[in-house]
Length: 233
Image 1: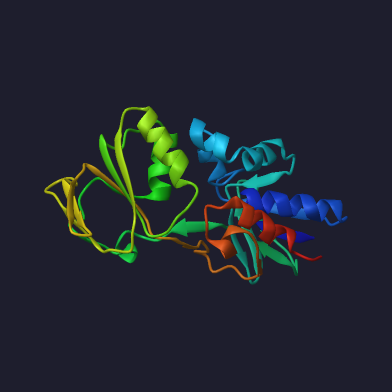
Image 2 (image 1 turned 90 degrees about the vertical axis):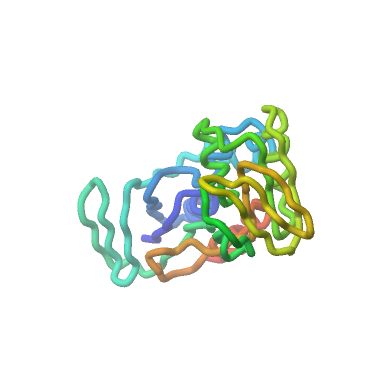
């Protein structure tokens, strides 16, 4: 038995490859199938941009055991089905990536309402939440995902500006963001979305072979897919 931890794009793709090679694999996830692509699928511009990967997730018939807390050394799973222990000796960790915090992304000053990481902003938008009216996006590097984000916000009447810069930013405001000083400019805004990069998501310090976005730490799913395809069985 092979264990795959994480039912996002990498976990499901890997499980399908294992099945094709004749291996029996169990896929576990705390939440459910799709990972962050499940959020992207709820936003028209994101769904179009990531259509190839979203469709693969939605069409996957891989069974996912949801609501799990898992450890790998020794192997133990607590799920809605109870406690499961075993001697599985190969683990693939496909737990994905999370965004760096604003502080780790060179954002200083007041910690007031209206400051979001990119992934948090996307999750709120997918839930139908309104995150602000005048939105500043500060990105520390280019990512293709910024374009569908800009298109989505602009199409819904938001005033949005995207800055791709390494300059440090200072946030000002009482209860909520009122302005951001960056690169010699003072920019009025009531929401700040920050993208400073991503890091591996592995809060349980699971041991095994790391696959997909937990390795690549990106929003570029071409890279995630290539990482999955390189795995040898």
